[in-house]
Image 1 (cartoon, rainbow, N blue to C red):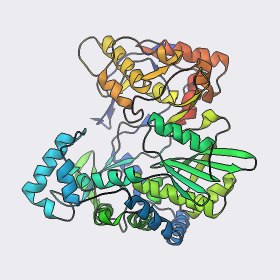
Image 2 (image 1 turned 45 degrees about the horizontal axis):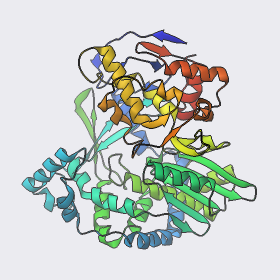
Image 3 (image 1 turned 60 degrees about the vertical axis):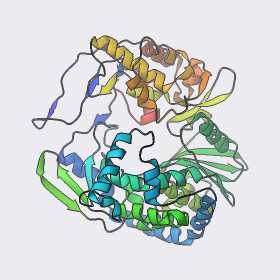
Image 4 (image 1 turned 90 degrees about the vertical axis):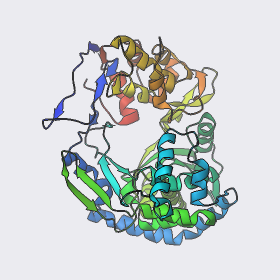
Length: 494
């Protein structure tokens, strides 16, 4: 069913206008996702992710320390592997060689380099042009399912990020598939068609008993047994707060010697005091000092430290020879993490970096972006609708740009129906990080493209009707509810 939308201004929060808002223009799906207001209560709640360790969770941290100390030899072997393909001069030399490389923050990097030289901060151990501390804020403009704790953003500033950007890039690029006994650890370098194709192959046709594919805190596990292959989507609960200081040391031990001094600095950045300011009263502020390194969301080592956590979970699963869901969850607990598992009963249930297998009309499979990603994004935008002039033309162009960005080379009715008219380059860029190198290509039947959602024929018709929607319309149906529930845990008001 659909109904028509009207445009309304931002709603004030506690008598003040919130820092962000969405413009809703349709066609949009009415789901139960929440956007947290930038207020002291939500900021306080968000910081529990970093600062609160409940009594029952202490055992997980002790487990992690114990297991890491027994597996430190693996991380030293990883250092030897990475050293074979890494050449690194010094932190300053790397920054001076690359600070003006093409990058979305190139202008900021150029200015930061000038400030480092002007203030003399470039000669300090930690590159901060002012006081050496970080700023914690609420992550705003994020759609979350109801009841989910909001997240924080920790701003280390551009100079500090320039200390480690190129060391971390070298580390990531040097990561190759690692076979460790009956365990394969595969770091996916990003959602490129080639990398995702290899992910699917390694999960469905594994060469070892255990195969773990991962990118930061996103991972899938494959177990090969006498009864065939089982694949699980694995999710770590409150990943950032579960990292102990010992995990940072494991990352350091895995770092090639030429970069260890830089890595120690990046770890020490995560020990800095955090300044938190009341968003409704800037004169109220507090500074917290960590007792051990904390993974700040803005740290350059976020991906590689989360990779280290995933590898530790894989080592624990191997160590305890876990084969069942309960066994895997228990093994993860021994590594210090609470995980949830979702078994892929059909190939399309596999989800990695918001991509899942989908069968083309020629019978081959491709890892395509989940349709729920587009459904949640379509028909609305952060703050004002880009462009000037006729709002209907701008809205249609924005939607067309989103579709082109999400599925640049995919053809299927529920996508093709939405890809029409002029398009917005700004909207097309929305999915740049999720769909790299032009995305996968192929033509798909509607029922195969939507197979992971287990839709009935009438529900498929509902989704087709939605794909023909126009600006000003809001949709709400059981088919769309299943899509958002599968991909995001959201529901709709039907």
